Image (cartoon, rainbow, N blue to C red; front, side, top):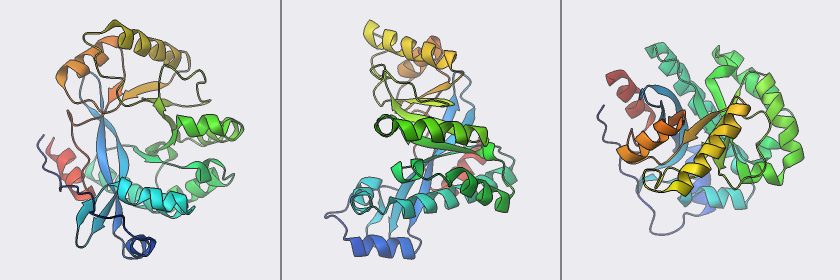
Amino acid sequence: MNCTPALERRPAQTPSLEDIWRALANDQLLPWFQAIVELPSRRIVAAEALARWRHPALGILPPASFVPALEARGMLRQLTELMLEKSLYSCLDWRRQGFDLPVSVNLGVESLLDPDLPSRLLQQLRILNLPASCLILEFNCRMLRSHQAAAEFMLPSLRAAGFGVAADDFSADDGWLPPAASVLKLARGCAQNLASHHQPRAALSSILSQARRRDAAVVAIGVENESECAALAALGCDAAQGYLFAPPMSPSEFSEWISSG
């Protein structure tokens, strides 16, 4: 599969809050999608939604240019709702193309603390006639540990409603495995040096053992070369994402890419 995605740029200066509000109002913020592939078959099994800003003058901007400003002002909810809505419509398009791919969307602390989250999401899915299994809700492990009581309530509730739940940025140093997580996404860098160093292999083996006891899949991120991929597959890692397989792509690019495969 071949793809040349639009080039991402970093702005010369930090955009103002007014600029970001204008981006929200003018439909300039959108999800790009990166494939998650099964190991060792390389079959696409899901996609992660990654926020991007299609700036009219500066081109495609990464989340570092606007997410911190939204987070500092308690405005991540607006971005989250937008990413969820647009991601679900993309998921609907994929299904119409014949691809039953779940989409993984990152949620923040405001979603974790929202007791109405499962019912609101189910309502959105009913409107689109999509099953709960098409959506994987991704939470950062550090955030889950900081709000452990909320996590122990919310994650089982989401699983009971039929959603996938991913714990992101998980490492061997984590002594607490998030409850009801169906997916553990490894911390960036866990895939590095697996082929030549014993310590990273032992750490990953420990994570895989924990995941199997919980019937959770393990996904490695940031995989960039064949040696990393082979080592992950040999250890029994379930899936991976990274530039070795595909970069993040716009919705239209991603749809074209999966169709061309």
